[in-house]
Length: 142
Image (cartoon, rainbow, N blue to C red):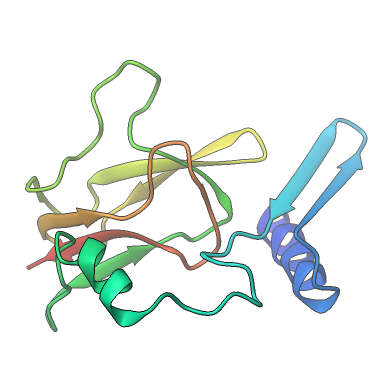
């Protein structure tokens, strides 16, 4: 938990001072927190016609969709190691407690498990993508 509090404190510093990244090293321990945003803050959103075209192929969340979110800042990995099969694929049935992915935070791999039983409807981040605390990882349909 101490590690999580340090990461949350660094994320607060990022927001407070409008930084893109911060890295802290204490002895052998090193923590890096990087802010990720879909578009630069000053950029205007794309026109509706341009934004709706790519979204048509993406599934829409139903009212029953349960979303699994990132409990820590880290790098998202779909498999336990490079070259291994992913933990889950879209369309797979999962039970509560099944491993969905790992998040690497400060060289520690945290297994992320499902709180819900259902079918994986969407895997949001790309393999190897940095995710922030609270980012959507999976959509589970009951």
